[in-house]
Length: 71
Image 1: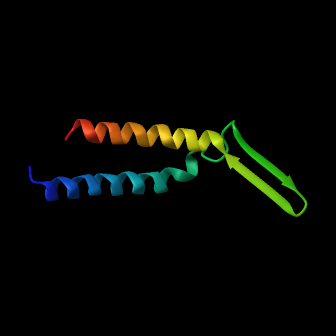
Image 2 (image 1 turned 180 degrees about the horizontal axis):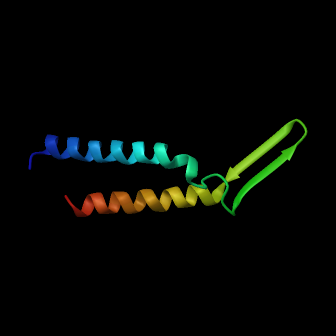
C-alpha cells in the first residue's frame, strides 16, 4: 500500500478515536482518579493530574505500538 492512503486511514482512525473519547468523555473518571492532587485555598487553586497523565500516556503508548505493528 502506498504511503498516502495508509496515512489517511491512520488519520481517520485517530479522528474516530478522538470523537469517541469526546463523546463518552463525560462518563470517564479522568481528572478524578486517585493520584490526581487538588489543593484549593482561598485565592489559590492547584491541580496536578499525575494518575490521569500516566493513564493517558499508557493508552497512547499502546495505540502507537499497535499502529507500528500493522505497518
